[in-house]
Length: 67
Image 1 (cartoon, one colour):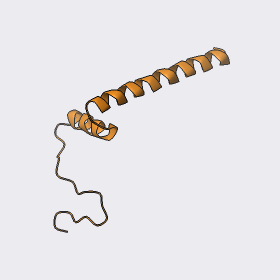
Image 2 (tube, rainbow, N blue to C red):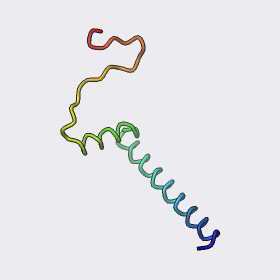
Image 3 (cartoon, rainbow, N blue to C red):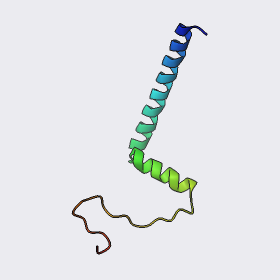
């Protein structure tokens, strides 16, 4: 494979991946989720026995569970 061919394949792959990310982000926006929320939902779906509990807010001044 020539260097020029490799560049062309890499460029096409990069373009394809960029378009896929763009489409995913559009869809997430439509259903009012951000990337982190979607990843969490995916993780929970893949690990249904995961123990879920209320988490503390991320704040230095926040007191959690009476602490």
